[in-house]
Amino acid sequence: MKKGFALNWVLSNDGRTPLFGVRDLQVLADAGARIVRFELRVGSAPEWSDDLIGRYAGIVRQLTGAGISPIGLIYADAVPGAKQADWNAGNAETTGGMGDNPFIHRFADLARQLAAALPEISLWEIWNEPNAWRQQSGRAYSGGSFIYPSNFAAILMQAGAAIKRVQPAATIITGGLLSHNNHGILNTQNSGADYLNDLYGALKRLGGGTLPFDAIGQHLYVDQPGQADPDHLWQYISHMQAIAQRNEGGAGRPLYLTEAAWTTTAVAPELQAANLRTLFEVCGRDERIAAVCWFQMRDNPPGKQYFGVCAPDWSPKPAFGAFQGV
Image 1 (cartoon, rainbow, N blue to C red):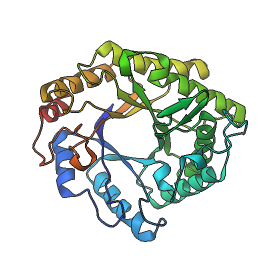
Image 2: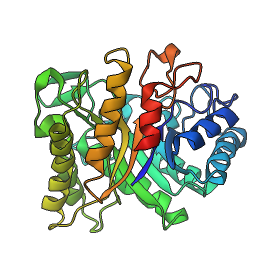
Image 3: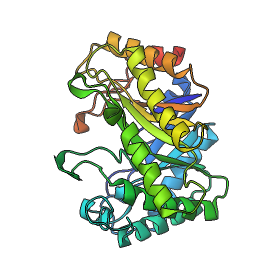
Image 4: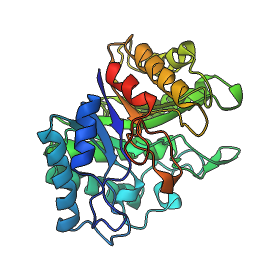
C-alpha cells in the first residue's frame, strides 16, 4: 500500500502559474509520500494548449523524478464549458437513453490527448465523486459532481479505451465514490456501494465483455466530525469489495482511497492525527488497498479547507508526524 496525498490545484485557474514546486517536493519527501493525486483541469483557459499541457508535464516530471507516482484525475473541469446537464444528457435513469452523449465523446478524446502527452502518468482516475449530489426529486439527482450510472458507464468505456489505446498498461480507476455517514446513517447507500452496484449493472447493459476499469476509487469521509471508528471505516471498505465480488464472480478489485481526511476546523489537531493513524491501520488490513491519499498536504485558507497535515505557513500539525510514522 502506498501512502500519499490528494493535492490542491497544481496550476492556477488560468493555467499560467505553477502552484507546486521545490517546497512541495521537499515536504512530500519529508513525509515519506510515495503517491499523489491531482486534477488535470483546463480551468479558465479556452482549450488545452501545448503550453498548458507542458506545464502539467513539468510538474509530473518533478514528481516522477523524486520517485513519487502521480495519479492523474480527469474530471468535468477537463472539458471547456462543462455543464452537468451536458454530461448527464441521454441517461437511462430519467430519460430512457443509453447514457451516451456528445460531452462523453469530447471527454474521451481529451483523455486520449492527455494520456498521449503525459506518458509518465500510468494511473488515471476518471471523474470525481460521481455519486455526490445536492438535490434529489424521485429518481432525478442534481448538484455536486453527480453523474448518472449509465452516463458514468459510458464515460468509463470510452475514456478508458481511449487511454488504453495510447497507454496499454495504464491503470484506470473509477472516480472516488463518496463514502460518508452524515446524520449518523451508516449504510450501503451512503458508502457508495449501491451506486457502484448500479454502475456494474449499467456496464452489463452496454455489453463489451471486459470491464473498462482496473481499480475502484473511494473517498472515506466517515465520522465527520469526531473520532474515527475503525469498524465504520472497515465496514465501508468491505462494502466496496463485496459489490465487486458479487458482480465479478468472487474476484476482488484493487482499491484506491484517493481522498480521506478530517479537518482541524472540526476536530482538534491531536484528534486529526489520531484519526489518520486509525485510517492507515484499518487500510493495512486489506492487501487489495493499493494506495491511501490524505486530503490535503497543506491547509488552503482561500478554499476554506483545513484538512492538511501542514498549516498554511508549512508548519507541521501533529498529523504530519502521524503520517510519517504510519
